Image 1: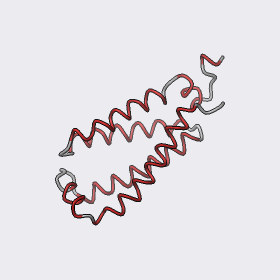
Image 2: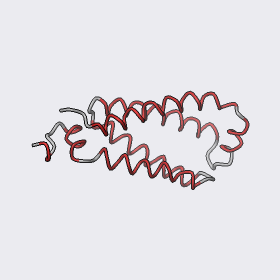
Image 3: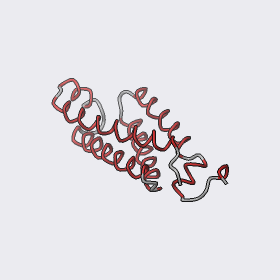
Length: 130
């Protein structure tokens, strides 16, 4: 089955932005302003960095899995993102900064769980394609 355009766009968006974030996060690790802001969280810096780097690697892997039509990629992406959102809301001193990510997650959910996307990930023919 042909991959829906929305799946392609979202998967590549996740891959590219995560790779850029991996590089920029690594470069900014020694930035005193970044460290000061991160130190205001309830979580220790080492835990924050570990979660950030693991999360970005998970996002790259799930984006690649989505491009290959592997349903676990979509599931893991949403599960990891939801857990991250809850942890962020519980620990972040800047809760309003979480809103754009939550909105983007909702938009991605809308497109990645439409009938054509479900058919692509499930290997079935979409109802409106039959």
